[in-house]
Every structure is written in structure tokens, then in C-alpha cells.
Image (cartoon, rainbow, N blue to C red; front, side, top):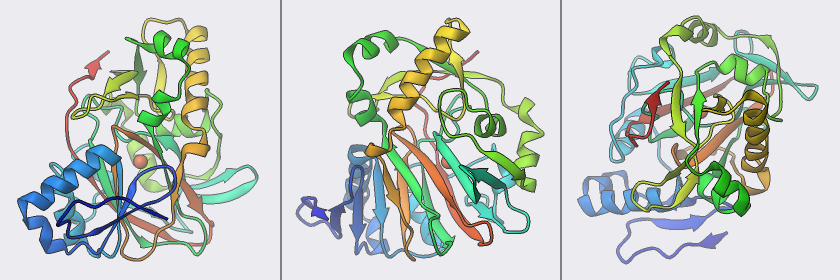
Length: 307
Ligand SMILES: [Fe+2]
């Protein structure tokens, strides 16, 4: 694993995993009280898009570390709150969890490539996630860099999507089960109670529009701002043309040769830039419980608008 040049005086060690992001070891959590450390970590987050912190434990640390990157809050998915509203729980239980079949395999907790909360006017800037209980095998989170995706698009596609916007809704069940753009399709064996509760109030989430290309705040680098899971269609385009273009873009965007898949060890806290990265969950065996806790880190790129 390659090392990344740490700045003089960094109170941590930096390494680089394959394809995307950095790993930070030996961060003394009290060091984040120092303004220069907070600034350095924020710069690294913007520059790198994905930070895997090693050796950090506990809900208090999860919230405290999240808070140096933005406001830690979520009011739109209370179904996932723990007793602490700042912390979401994503749980697969063998007896009640969302059980799926994918390519003939039973899986719990699988999620396709997506961008969190892009069905809102103000998608969250990011999240910090940790594994409370991992299955013995798999249970990984995948990440793909949308800047690298955009950079590697053919020039004619870049020109074609310049100035276009896409329309989103919040219907995850539809997105999982009836993918239209060449993604993997699952068959649901059983829905979880929490997924059903969110699905029952889809009317709370009117459709929204986001540009398909945006510049990363802070650096100006262009990225492909689409979400394979929640996208419906391209604004102002007929359905056949929109479906065809989205299929090309999503096939390119979700090419897993660019993906980093994280296997959780105790003490891992993974910070991703939700504006900058796609993520997915590989799921785990149907007979093993998986519990993740995560925060929502707010922000507003001010590019979304109502339909
Ligand atoms: Fe997600």
C-alpha cells in the first residue's frame, strides 16, 4: 500500500488504498479540537473524497468527528434514527431484514450504486459510517470517484451532457427492483419494516432536479452528478432518448474497475463525500446480522430545484 505525503506536523499517518481515497491511522481524537487539524482534515476530505479512519470507536467519537466536517443532522428519515437523532442505524436482521436474491444468491443488506438523499433539494454533503456488527464474509461498502468517472467520459458524451439536468424521486424499492439502465436487479424475498415505512410516505418526497455535471465546491473539478438508483429521466428529453443516454452514463459510472471496496475492521470509521462519490453495499449472508451506524453531514451545493 502506497504512502501519501503527510504534511509536516500531521498528527496521523496517511496511506492510500487502491483506486480511491486515503487511510488515516493513529489519529488521536482529541487532536480534532485543534483548528489546524480540523482544517487539514477538511482539505483532505475535499481533495481525496474518501477517508478511512482506523482505530476510532464509539458513537460519541462518530458524532464528534462528523461535526468537524459540517452540521450533523437528519430530519428526513427518522425511521432510521437511533435514540440519538444524529446517528442512523442500518441493520440487517436474519429474521426481519430486507432479504433479497441477486444472481441466484440470497443476500441481506445489499444496496446498488447510489448517491444518498439526491431526491432532496439539498443532498447531504457526506456521511461517516462504522460497522457495529459485521458478517463473517462480505458486508463491504464500495466507493467510486465521480470526478474520475467524469474525466474518463468520451469528449462527445461530455459535450452532450453539458447543461443537462436529471429528475429524481425517492422510490428506493422501484430503483432496486426495476432498474432500467442496465444495473443489477434484485428479487425481494422479504421487506424490512423500516423500508416499508419509508415507502408508505413517498408523497413526502416530491420530484427534484439536479444538474448532471457539476463543479466540486472548493476545487472546481467537474464530476458526473447522477445517481443510478434514484434517477428517473433527463429533463426535457423524450423517454427513449433519456433512457438510452442514462444507460450509457450509468454503465460507464458503475464500472467497478474504478471501485474501492472497504472491508470493515473494528475501529474503522469511513468518511465519504456524498457529492463526489457513488457508494454501494455488497450485502452479506442471509443468516448473519449486520449493524452499521452512520451520520449525515449536511451541506448545500445550491444547484437543485423543484420540478
Ligand atoms: Fe447510502
